[in-house]
Image (cartoon, one colour):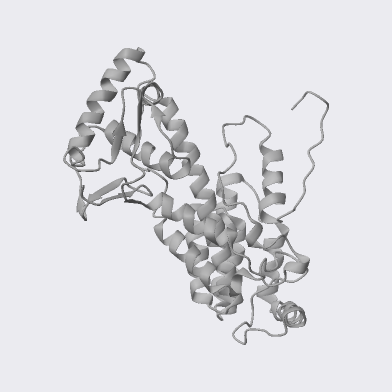
Length: 355
């Protein structure tokens, strides 16, 4: 059959030999193809027709749902010209359905996760100076054009919508992590323009992400744009106030004070001396990139005194992010400790049985 290319980040797009497919009969045909492709990349194996029918038509009686599935499958085969190929993409029996593992196709989601997995598996002392891994991260974030299946909503299937939501959250977190590390690496290597670009991409995904505001402030200050760095702090304050009625974290305010007073340079010099003692060399392009007092230091330049290197980071499935009611203040504090301050251990204590 013709070469199939699926793009699921942002708007759903399917191409056959670089020609866009626009004649899907229903959104559920697109949803079925997307589900089979993503699950084939993640786990492989066949899906029972009953399971797929319940996924897309949960309110139908089983026989009616399976009959509708057969009709959608027939239309899908015609749309992607799968009926005429010597090796069909869609393999089906009376009881199962799957994508043919022997047929090559391109899926942006699979490429994205594979690039991150390769980076995670690679052994390196400093990600900031590992060019193969940085290239893989750059390729991965270039694929991330927006939320997973952002334009495909199956309103009468809560099961499919829950699957889509969990995948969206998983890829969203992975993209933010990759952008964070790229921002750090660019700053360490003195590429402040690219650092600012990746920081702004983080903020486009989460405008309230304080660590990205700090990274952008630092990149702007490093490139001599002190006024812009101060303005970025004010923008951070504004969005936090509007979204949460909160003030910036002390680390953000401390960085602002250092930028405003010019005290950032002494902290930079101390940290560069520390890196030189560890590594025996310092990139001469690095001038201003670190906040003093041990706050948010580079996670790649000095692994001996920081969190585990990125080579041990788990880029796999995100945890279940199903709804949780109440405890907003406690959740915000946990988020601050784990994400902003990057604590390695937080203990939640309570009476037995309450959790």
